[in-house]
Length: 614
Image (cartoon, rainbow, N blue to C red; front, side, top):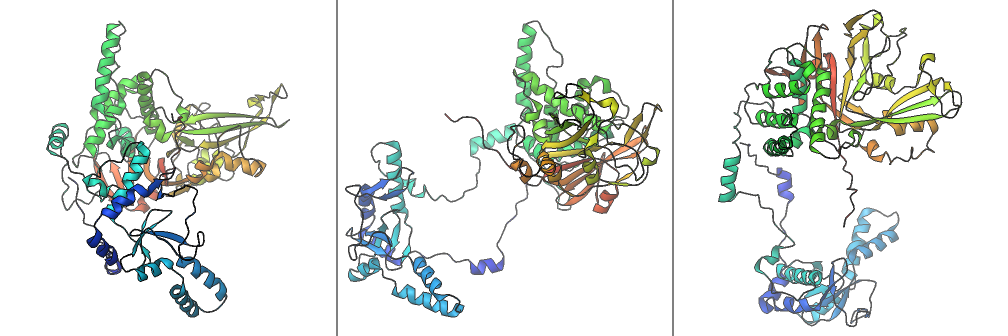
């Protein structure tokens, strides 16, 4: 049950807010003539190609002119509703503008006084026409079909006149005859906001198909959806990642808006399984859908219940998907994150006849949120020929910065899912010191000279040459996940260890310096406008500002550690330690040993549909 909050404007705005009073001249006109003149005027309206209404001219090429001065272009023209006489009215803004130009550098008080004089002396033949004939104060704008009071010298609104204009526009669009004005047509153009409330039939459907949310107590100050997850036996790696995903804004909005309905999905899977079994090709994992389990978890977590939730069903489904990791042993949180996104993607691929590329970001909700595109440039040092490849990724794995004096090189091996591979070398003095996330990103996008054992075949030289390799980000995802490689494995020493070095990470991050467009401009200059025929990077550069909302930390040793998630909700940090959730200070988050950081775009930009409109 949501809490209703009554919003009231501040006292100052209430004092300054004035409700406009209706025009007394229009009220007097309608009391004497009623709405008959407006219905008669309906036949004199014509609708322009873009739908704007105006007064019909006969013949159409006739130029309307003021009956007093004969003018047609210097001022606005108004037709009297009573006698149809056309009169002009000079717009005060034009006179004021010309008078201000004449003032030059004189003071403001003198300018105001002259503006008042100009207003009083401005010729208005429409006002003179209303003064000469007392009952002719209401007129219509010839070009805009809007009501105008000649005495008040201002536009006015009337629902009956508005209904006549709407009927003319409707008849012009439909091409039929003018129908009788319906009763509710007066509110067609100006509709008051009315909150939706279910009718009795809809109320019955809602009661049958949903469960009421529990109302939070007045002493409960935690945000909605913040709920602990029970540890099912060394499953802190799973709980930490699930807490981050449950509060990922695009992912949360997707599931809470019922974009993936588990009941509908399971029904379709059952129908598909029946057809497959009938054809003789059974599949026992056909109904496996991690997205359905996520949908069920979102419903449970955001139900308002504060008791810890047990994700046993999700764990079982994940074990079926990743059979090699099905055990109660401690697993890697980053490996679980990649495996879970793969499970969601593979289910979508099975349901679709034509697979879609992960790089497009449109194949499934997992890649819509986390998928980005990397650009890899390998340049021949002999002739300058550059080979460019693009790879999709759902996260960026970063090496910690080496200490000064260390000869460790940035890792360059790339995998299908991670943007960076394992470190090439291992230094004993990397277990202490401080690194920064920006420094790790700078190191990731820094040009790297490949060794003699990594020569690439140059298509221009037709031999293997030494080369320079540089990574950059071609497309930013909605949510950027950064994985810090704290677990190092040395094939030479045949040992593994954890790097406990402290990492500084900002709460706000600008990814513009690491975009392909920025790096190529720095390399070639601003004369480079497009790269390999790709579309413009304007959207990427506009949405390069990110905000931190989740941090997964690892404490302990390599084989015996514990994962904890810090969530940023309503600008307040919360520590999610399995079933326990506590509010913490941001200094505690900054001092934590970050393992995975999740950043979301500050502003989301939407691209127009590329599908042709029939």
